[in-house]
Image (cartoon, rainbow, N blue to C red; front, side, top):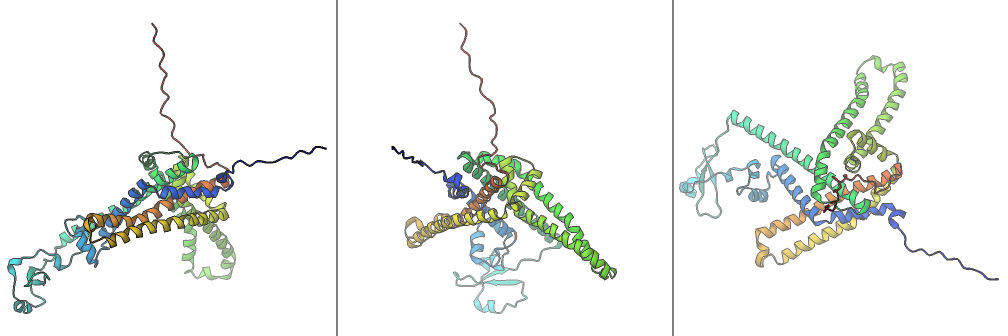
Length: 386
């Protein structure tokens, strides 16, 4: 009796289909992109310096004051001590004369460590009320513009990174950063509108709770009948409000992802982000854990590279070009590249988690990403008739 052997040959395993969560590894590849790292590093440096200068965070930092005072526009917002006033070397006095000056004297003493004699400078005159009001308006305007620029520019980069992540995870579709940034710029009003709708809705839903808090001061509210009737309703409403609040807090991070992936409006972004964040909480937590496990080795590698570069600089700092200010500025940018890496990876991982949750909840494949339609098909040229 002849026996036949049946063998199953497994040629290849599509691990991306079997374990879709490993798609998060592509976020690491995007986070190590040289162009993105450069753009985000410049963004973080610009935003941090502008915010720090506008809100006076450089006060008391002598090193930063010395760095910013030489012809920098930012230094106009840095509080200056009397030592930074314009001196008059011709009015030098002897140490004996300087010791005789009183604290309430109209002259102030500036001791220059590089000079043999003290240098006398004039105390700044007190500003008038009109100039003080103008300066306060200018400071407030500068702070407002700095915060506005930080929010809008960060939002633009967030949506651009989310768009690039969606294209990379879907079909390895490559697109330029400029074109995707242009598309993300058109979606910023929708993001702002969605956030405004969420905040307005939460405020309206919180009004009954706020009114109930005000009723606590009324005597009739403390009666047993009122408490017996309203307490169960208040608990039910508080539970409902907590669920709405939790979904909005978790889902607000997915709003940019919805807009750049589906090319939808603000209401669709709110509904999708809320549904995906609450309907699959266990998978949500698992994907977050996977993103952390993928991100930690990349972060350690990025820190190792930056620390190695700084160590090489410290070893050769006294040789050749390693002591120039340009090299020091470049090394300062390398240290900020670690923050840029975390910035890119976080927004890219949020986009990957959104695609995975959409696949689990609505059974939508990962490659279902909106792409712009071609502008037109060229008309084929017909041969000329002779």
